Image (tube, rainbow, N blue to C red; front, side, top):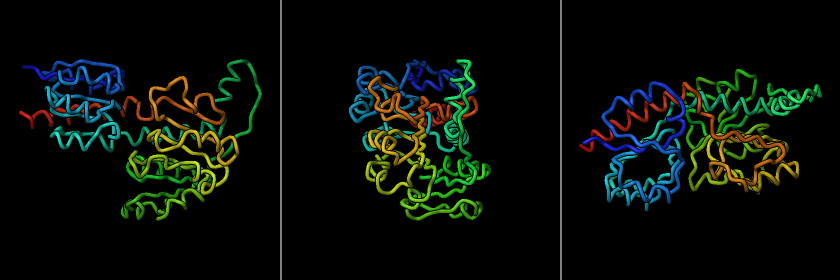
Amino acid sequence: MSRKILLTSTSFQDTPGKHQELLAAQDYEVTAMRGPLKATELLPIIAEFDAVICGDDEYTGEVLRKGKAGRLQCISKYGVGLDKIDLDAAARLGIPVSNCPGVNHTAVAEHVLALLLTYEKNIHIQYNTVKQASWRRLTGHEVSGKTLGIIGMGAIGKALAEKAIAFGLQVIGYDIKRDERFFAAHPQCQYVEDINNIFAQSDYISLHTPLNEQTRKIINKEVIEERIKKQAIIINTARGGLVDSTAIIEGIETGKIRAYLADVLEEEPICTDEVLLGANNVIITPHVGSRTYESVERQGIMAVENLIKLLSRSI
């Protein structure tokens, strides 16, 4: 009997490539749905599937228990972040979960710089003014010589550091664990042991940590008002929950911070009542940092290969 697979990653579905060919070559019955799916959408259907290739769907304990009572054997996460999956519940139920680390770092690091350069060069504004036949010219800023503080020196943080150094930025990085080999090989990137040094010294702060109880709202009202360098720009391509969006808006309005550039929101897709929607000095892209043809193919292939391995163990 063919394995029934639920595919919800829209990046996987929307981007043609070898990842789609690999999945199609398997003897699976694949049902595609447009994620991210809420728990309420998963509960009525999850028991029907042997496995899932998911994006940022809500795999709560209740969803996982319902799946385990049916056919669900494993979850293959397309992408890196696992904060939408109750990993403790999955472990208790014996449902293995895989993800795709180390394959989207180039795309996301490039997106960070794209957001930063777009804002500092006023490209988002000038694009629209010229479309209206206006030649009103704004004055921008150079990023060279400024200090970029990176919170989270994993694969993406390291890739960003390397690219930022090439742009002439002074780079400092913080992580709960220092990668001695990386910092030895990149003396232009300084490791700081105290996250407050990132806040105090950085003209630009880029977030690259997983979302958990220790990092939730790591950028909050107290940090913005008392610890961040005045007029810093915050860049978030990791998870929306890493910042307090209301504090971000207040910080911009009071001049504590200069701008917020984000590829992620706490609630995705965007809602009409999103507090950041339409705010001044805020640029939001719809979680497309890793959505390049190259990155999608790499992540997609890994997600399918992970799925194949997990299912083979359950035979």
